Image (cartoon, rainbow, N blue to C red; front, side, top):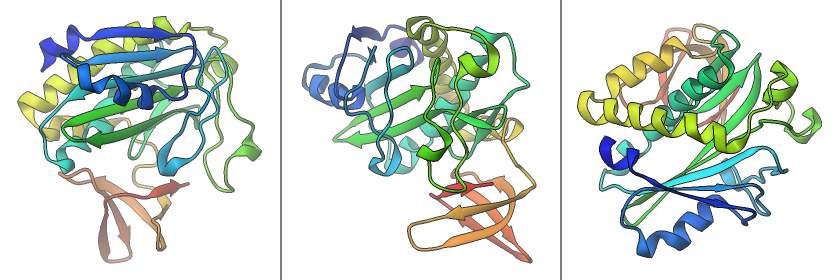
Length: 244
C-alpha cells in the first residue's frame, strides 16, 4: 500500500464542482491511487453535507484509492489524514507549536480551524477530501454559534503557500501514516494523535444528531471513539461535532 500511494498519479484542474465528486467520476477507470487537485470548487462540501467555501488560492484535493477494509477500519483514515496534514503544515511552515488536532480530524492553528477532511466510501473505493484555508477563511459569523472560528495560514503566519506545494508535502505524509496503520495497526496512530490533540483532559461538548453530552475529553479508544468522562461514567462516542 505504501509503495502504491507513493506512485499515485496527480491531476490538477482549474475548476471542478467537487474534488470528491470528480474522484468518483474517474473511479471506473482507476488502476492506482489518484490525487485530484483543483484551483477552485463550485460545489465544495464538508461533513454532514455542509457547504465548503472554495475561493481560489486555498487547497482543495481528494485522494481516491481502492481498499477492501471494513467500514470501521476505513474510518481510521480520518486520523491518519489528520496526522499527515499536521506533518505537512510543519514542513511548509517550519513550526509545530501553533498546530493541534481536534477530534476526529480537524487541524487547528492558533486555536482556529484551518482545515477539514471528508471521507466517502462506496463499493470498494475510499475518497479522502481535504480542504485547507491557505490564504482565506470564512468570517466567524459563517459558522454556527460555539463552533471553532475558521482561520487561514496566510493571516496567522504571514506565509503564502501554493496549493501544489502543499500537496507536495501532504502526499508523502499520507503514505507514511498509511504504512504505519497497515503494518503496526491503529495504536501508534492513536498515540500520535493524542500527543497532538486539542483540549485533551479538558471539558468539551460533543453533539450527536440526537443529543449533546458534556464532560472531560479523557482519551480516544482503540476504535477511534472519543471517550468522554461525565462524572463517574465514561462514554464512548463514535461520531459527533465537538465544541470547546
